[in-house]
Image (cartoon, rainbow, N blue to C red; front, side, top):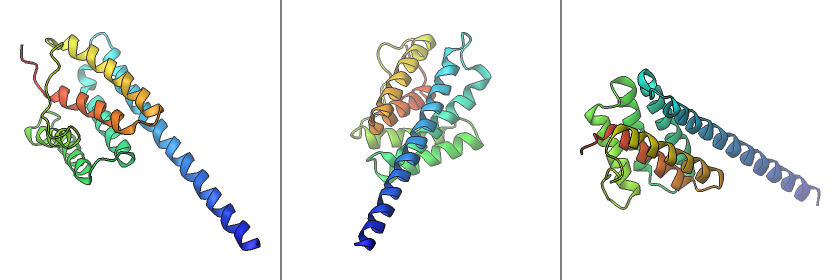
Length: 164
């Protein structure tokens, strides 16, 4: 009997710790999303902070990715995109290719299409702020897959030229 109580106690402690760690990770991801949104709230846009904003966006995606049901190739592509962005430029063609590969992996093989409502930069900024808010809501209610998809859409949108 005593062994059973000890084992149940240990299991309970492990469950509590894992829930605490998951909540802490979720809070970190939420803080990064909030910070990304703050760069978009600046009247002049992110400007010189654009690289920092993009890096935070990719970090949030990578941090939340293990909580999704996405295939391992998704994380591999995101890591490659982040490494290229960090070492070169967020607009480096090789990094953009990896972002698009990751996008197709989680969107039934479909390529990214710029939303038809976006015809100028301010439209993209407004759309991004709205999608970031939705991503935060999804994260808070445990819809991590949806959250990461929204974040990835924003990342791909940032590196995709607006043609109108």
